[in-house]
Image (cartoon, rainbow, N blue to C red):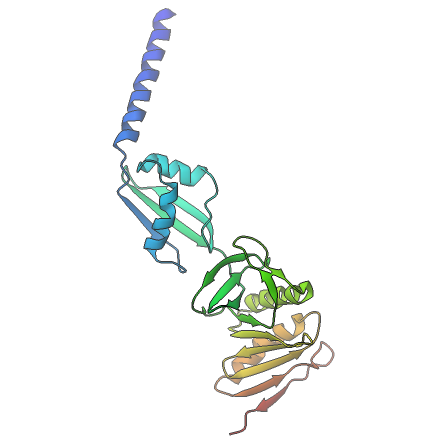
Amino acid sequence: MRKKIKIVIFMIIVLIIIAVGIVVVSKLEEVSVKGNTYYTDDKIKKELTKYYVGGNTILTYLRIKYGEEIRIPFVDEIEVDLEGFHNLTVGIIEKEVVGCLPYMGEYICFDKDGIMVGSITEKRENVPIVKGIEYDVAVFNKPISTKTDEVFELTLNLTQLIKKYNLAVDKIEFEKNMAVRLYYKDIKIILGKKKHFDTEISNLAELLPKTEGMKGTLHMEDFSETRQRVIFEADKL
């Protein structure tokens, strides 16, 4: 029995020595990044250096994979793979941005829940700019605080519908009376003042492709399920 215990203890010690040896020789030399569109690879790598553990590949891998939540603007999740003793591959899963608010030459981006996910200096395709909303403060990873909750709730409804139907709307604009206008290329779409725009947006998905190459205004302020009438007013030459 004593002999067996000694053998077990010896094997445990050997395994510990091997594990320590592997960790010691695992010097992190290269990090590969994929899946990011908002930042350069170098920017992501720089952000990740905060989570490196003594320049060690294995310990860094364990911290990124199982440690505290990593918070980087526009990044929803991070997947990390161990590629040998000296290399890591980091896969970026980005947050879904549904709209942005202009602010001092930049754009504050928010997700479907109205949470600020980051800011950009140049507008991105398929992310509509929202104008006419007054907001108090925007803090990363927190809901945007607006002066009129009703307007922002309507904004979230509109942006989610636009995303759902894959409409390349450039801008959403609120008038003082909360009437809504959309802008798509050279087309202005007047939606009017309503609480919900599900019917209008679903029909826009069929209408907008028909306006390709045209300039003018689509009047949908009187549009409804029972009165599906749209008037197109062409711009005067």
